Length: 349
Image 1 (tube, rainbow, N blue to C red):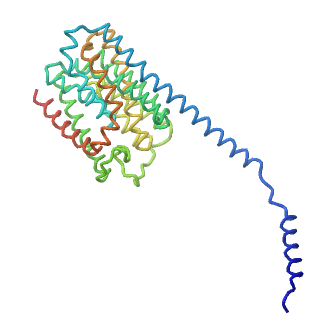
Image 2 (cartoon, rainbow, N blue to C red; image 1 turned 90 degrees about the horizontal axis):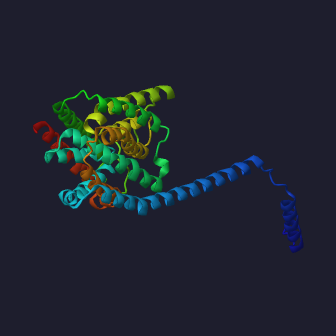
Image 3 (spheres, one colour; image 1 turned 180 degrees about the vertical axis):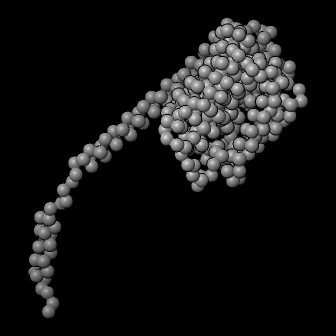
């Protein structure tokens, strides 16, 4: 039997009253509190990041250029400037590579200087002097501006402090002859070339400067965590100490790549965090031998160092653009060719 219009209206009214009178499920106050706390934490993190970025930009421009101008006027004369005019270009090249792979610009400076007759010991002193500022200052400020979360701060003490101890011992008491240092440098170049080749293979033909960061592990490949927290700290400290004792003190490089490998295989960090941490640790590790060479041995080639700093500064700033325009894979392939050529040079001079 068909319902009349009045009956239908009555049913609709009853349904509406039931919906209004139906109680809502009780809400958990703790859930709202947690969401509010997370929102506040995110806002605080964003604000802190913005403050750090502003401070980093202010230090990079104009503070650092002003300090360099003061250093230039205090240490250089016209003859020294004209004899080292090519160093900024070399600094740009080294910084572009150092910001692509955690190896440090010394791997470019040392062989080029050796080619022009500079002793390997002085080249190593120059390398640690440059990396202290190139990686430890310019690189640090750049990443504090871009993405400070990429720095694995919990790794830093176990990478820097043991390397300082090893570098100090090796610098004051070197145990390798110049010939052995050249062979060590050649072996290091070949090892880095193999690691970079592995990284190119993992990129699977991707040639975009904005693509995934340098890595030697497949994204789907899981790394088993090594032991417990204490065991990882001990292993990281031992590797860093050996790198400082053998590599940093004798050839001026090594701990950046060592830290990258330790971050990858011991700490199981993501690729980007391992690369950034390795780059910065390489600079901070150089502080100890740089101070020894500058203040005690007084064998840092000041003219080369002062003229090389602007190139390192500019190279760190324009490296992302260079990688994007040329393609990061092309940069890494050229780097491998340079490394193999450097190994041959070190074995033949």
